Length: 98
Image (cartoon, rainbow, N blue to C red; front, top):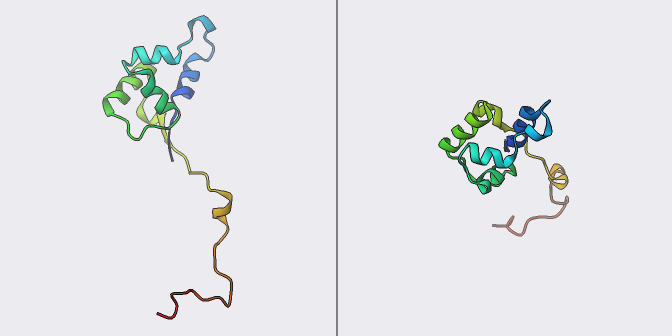
Protein backbone atom coordinates (compact mmCIF):
# COMPACT_ATOMS: atom_id res chain seq x y z
CA UNK A 1 0.00 0.00 0.00
CA UNK A 2 1.36 3.41 -0.98
CA UNK A 3 1.01 6.08 1.72
CA UNK A 4 1.45 9.85 1.35
CA UNK A 5 3.00 11.36 4.49
CA UNK A 6 1.91 15.01 4.18
CA UNK A 7 0.85 15.48 7.80
CA UNK A 8 4.01 13.82 9.12
CA UNK A 9 6.16 16.20 7.06
CA UNK A 10 4.20 19.21 8.31
CA UNK A 11 4.72 17.98 11.88
CA UNK A 12 8.47 17.68 11.25
CA UNK A 13 8.62 21.25 9.94
CA UNK A 14 6.64 22.56 12.92
CA UNK A 15 8.80 20.84 15.52
CA UNK A 16 10.11 23.47 17.95
CA UNK A 17 8.23 26.31 16.23
CA UNK A 18 5.87 28.50 18.28
CA UNK A 19 2.23 27.62 17.67
CA UNK A 20 1.48 31.01 16.13
CA UNK A 21 4.18 30.45 13.47
CA UNK A 22 3.42 26.81 12.61
CA UNK A 23 2.63 25.81 9.04
CA UNK A 24 -0.87 24.42 8.63
CA UNK A 25 -2.67 22.29 6.09
CA UNK A 26 -4.32 25.44 4.71
CA UNK A 27 -0.91 27.12 4.43
CA UNK A 28 0.32 24.15 2.37
CA UNK A 29 -2.67 24.35 0.03
CA UNK A 30 -1.93 28.04 -0.65
CA UNK A 31 1.86 27.63 -0.85
CA UNK A 32 1.68 24.66 -3.24
CA UNK A 33 -1.24 26.12 -5.23
CA UNK A 34 -3.23 22.91 -4.69
CA UNK A 35 -6.84 22.64 -3.66
CA UNK A 36 -7.57 21.73 -0.07
CA UNK A 37 -9.64 18.79 -1.31
CA UNK A 38 -6.73 17.37 -3.32
CA UNK A 39 -4.43 17.56 -0.29
CA UNK A 40 -7.10 16.01 1.91
CA UNK A 41 -7.49 13.09 -0.50
CA UNK A 42 -3.73 12.57 -0.53
CA UNK A 43 -3.51 12.80 3.27
CA UNK A 44 -6.17 10.13 3.79
CA UNK A 45 -4.91 7.96 0.88
CA UNK A 46 -8.09 8.39 -1.14
CA UNK A 47 -6.45 9.65 -4.32
CA UNK A 48 -6.04 7.20 -7.16
CA UNK A 49 -3.13 9.02 -8.76
CA UNK A 50 -0.85 11.95 -8.03
CA UNK A 51 0.05 14.44 -10.73
CA UNK A 52 3.80 15.01 -10.93
CA UNK A 53 3.39 18.79 -11.14
CA UNK A 54 1.30 18.81 -7.95
CA UNK A 55 3.81 16.56 -6.20
CA UNK A 56 6.63 18.88 -7.24
CA UNK A 57 4.85 21.97 -5.87
CA UNK A 58 4.11 20.20 -2.57
CA UNK A 59 7.74 19.13 -2.26
CA UNK A 60 8.92 22.70 -2.93
CA UNK A 61 6.60 24.07 -0.25
CA UNK A 62 7.60 21.40 2.28
CA UNK A 63 11.30 21.56 1.34
CA UNK A 64 11.59 17.82 0.76
CA UNK A 65 12.00 15.15 -1.90
CA UNK A 66 9.15 12.98 -3.27
CA UNK A 67 10.62 9.97 -1.48
CA UNK A 68 10.16 11.79 1.84
CA UNK A 69 6.41 12.02 1.19
CA UNK A 70 5.56 8.79 -0.58
CA UNK A 71 6.33 5.49 1.14
CA UNK A 72 5.28 1.90 0.63
CA UNK A 73 3.87 0.04 3.61
CA UNK A 74 2.72 -3.57 3.69
CA UNK A 75 -1.04 -3.85 3.41
CA UNK A 76 -2.75 -5.11 6.56
CA UNK A 77 -4.05 -8.65 6.17
CA UNK A 78 -7.56 -9.48 7.33
CA UNK A 79 -7.65 -11.96 10.21
CA UNK A 80 -9.66 -14.60 8.32
CA UNK A 81 -7.41 -14.41 5.24
CA UNK A 82 -4.50 -15.76 7.28
CA UNK A 83 -6.23 -19.10 7.74
CA UNK A 84 -5.74 -21.51 4.88
CA UNK A 85 -9.05 -22.28 3.25
CA UNK A 86 -9.51 -25.89 2.25
CA UNK A 87 -12.52 -28.05 1.74
CA UNK A 88 -13.22 -30.77 4.30
CA UNK A 89 -11.73 -34.22 3.59
CA UNK A 90 -14.03 -36.68 1.94
CA UNK A 91 -16.10 -34.02 0.22
CA UNK A 92 -15.72 -33.71 -3.52
CA UNK A 93 -16.38 -30.73 -5.63
CA UNK A 94 -19.55 -30.90 -7.70
CA UNK A 95 -17.31 -30.37 -10.73
CA UNK A 96 -14.91 -33.26 -9.92
CA UNK A 97 -16.77 -35.77 -12.12
CA UNK A 98 -16.38 -33.70 -15.27
